[in-house]
Structures are given as structure tokens and as C-alpha cells.
Image (cartoon, rainbow, N blue to C red; front, side, top):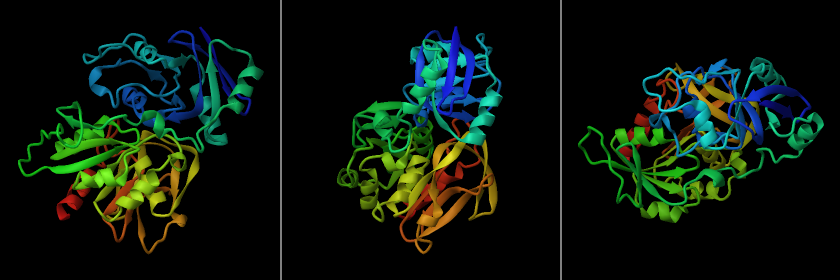
Length: 377
């Protein structure tokens, strides 16, 4: 089935759908990972985006229930050079095409993804429409240009949980206020109570906190500071999530009210929102950082780690007070901010994904830093 990919600047690509008829719009981006497509697809940070894989062959190991990072898949569409319809993997319980069809995501193959990626790298991420129903160039380009885009949108409202829940034994425990949260860690000491604000949280963040003797209580993004502090947590975790941090309603004010009261650890969007709470600002990157092979330097140790990343916005270090905020990590590709910490309050954050789903394990130590911070009180 023929499919047309139309970018807002008038660029057109033609491919074919491997998931049946459909149409989608969103910001078109690319991911440089060679594997981990199921973790990518179930990362809520991709909400509102059309994702292109740079690795040419996708689908060869199928999908399974264990590699889910949220309850569903989130991109608007998924673009690949070549789709493998016959997976070979003892863990597979289904095909990628079937997985995309289940969640209504359009999958397209059979076009020059390298040319598309080179175009995005040159011109920047932009709005696009992918369709099997309307193949008329001018019509699709006009619709891409008139679509909403990412800037200023509150994408978190689309993905945050409606109700609080705990996490135990690798699955959700509905309910609230640590009554159902449990830890399966080998550590027999008193567990740490962590409130995780859900801006589009990935399950492996919960798994890792739980494995490090933390009772994790996940709360909706709209939860106010008074409710959070009433739970008397040992620490507060700010999760990843989609879109423009400056479009997220009400959360920055909540974080400002939490600063200095409890240790805080932020990842990705949580990092950006924490920077806004410090009084800083963010800006949109030309084409973002997405993949499992991004080099980052920890300035506190001079060590380099390979990281998993997924973001299109970045913290502007020039907007932060250097007497209060320290730059702790930088991206070695473009020297952009990858981590900060507050010099007075027990709060730190990173732009990348230390939970390694999917990706390398180099940054696992950050969860131990958070545990150490809670231990100090």
C-alpha cells in the first residue's frame, strides 16, 4: 500500500505501509539506536512524533510483553528502511506490525531513510504528515504546515496517569499513598519512600528504584506540593515525558514549592522542569538527541559514559545563576547541557536516560547518588 511522507518545507518521500491504511501527523524525528524499538515505541516521550529509525532493518526480533516501558505505544507513525515480517527470537510473542496495528500506529517502509535523516539534520526537525489515504503532494504539505507542532503544547496532559499507583514485583499496584507499594530488593534495611511525579514515566525507572530498596508511589503530574509533602517521602523523583517543558501547566510552581524540603532527582523532562523551577529557560534543539549511543561527560568525575537519550529541548545554562546551579554533565557531540545540580538544595538532574531501556548501563550510578542523598536526609 503506497504511502506519502510530506514535510512542512515541501519535501516528499514515497514508501509503502506495512500496517495497512492510515494517516498521522506530528513532528518528524530520527533515532540512531540499532535495537530497542519496542522500548522506544512505548516511551511516552515520543507522543506526538513521527519516528524514523536510522538502522536499516527493523522488526527482526519481534515484540514481547516484558519489554514494555508503558501501557501502550505512543508515536504517531513509525518509519523504517526495511521491515522484517518474520521475527527470529525465542522471546518474541508477536510481530512489530501487529504491535503497531494494535495501537493504531502507521508503519511505513521502503524509502531512503538516510536521505530523510540527512535532511532533518540539515534543516532541523519539522512538522510532517504521513498518509496512505491522501497522496496529493500540495494537500499534505499544506496540512503539515497547519498542524499544531510541539512548541507550547502541554503534551504531559496526554500521558500522565489519572490515579496514583505503586510499583511492585515488576507490575503496577493500583492504589495510593504507599499502601500497595513494595520493594523486592535484597536490602533488608528500612526502605526509602519515593514519590515519582509522572510526566510520562518509563517502567524501568520504577523497576530500578524498586530494586534499590525504594517504595515508589507514582502520582499524576497535576498533584500539588501539599499532597506530595503530606506523604512524607524520603525523596521526590521527576520523570521523563514528552514535548516542550514550557508548555506543561502548573508543574514548575509545584517543584518550586518542593525545593529544599526533600531530595529531588529529575530525568529528561523532569530535568528541564527542574531547571525552569530554578528560574532558568529552555530552547529547542535543531534536531534533538535520540538514540542509545550519545556520549556524555560527567564533569564531577571526568568520566565519559555512553547514554540513551530522547529529547528535542535543552536547558540553557546561560539562563541559570552559576552561584546556585552547577553544570555537572555535557554532551560531547555538541557541548549542550546534560546535567545540573543545585549548590544549596539537595536536587540534581540529567537530560539523558540512566534507566537503560533500551540502552547502555553506564549511568546506573545516578540512582545510587539519589539513594545517597536520601540517606543523608
